[in-house]
Image (cartoon, rainbow, N blue to C red; front, side, top):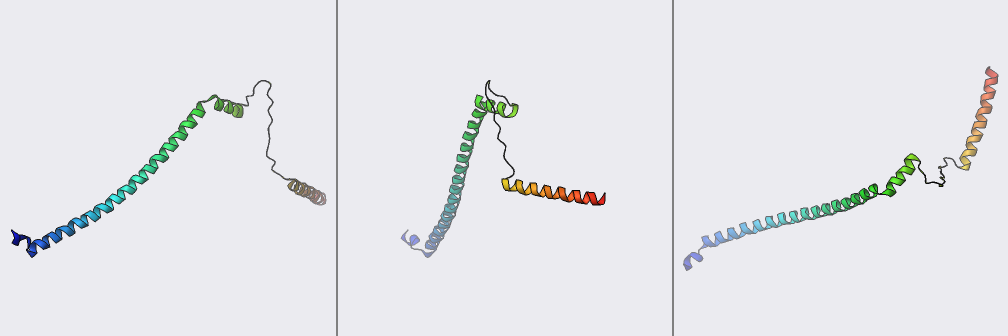
Length: 121
């Protein structure tokens, strides 16, 4: 029995088995690392979906509320409470300088148009 364990063939076989199992362990470690990364990504996606679900639930509650209905009625149907006064604010497209430039341009155009019109007519 001692001779079998001292054999070079058996030592070579054990060495080959050791290398084989070592390489298998290295491959398995790489696969485990890859799977852990996929699990981490899946956990982040689950958290994102949960956050989005909470936002949608909150929005759904708001859309079902009276405050939303009142706001929509005011904006789209121009509904107001009795005795309430509505004030509208419109964005001004021109500044004072723009208006001055536009009025001088219209005056010069109208002067030019009158001159050309009187000469050619």
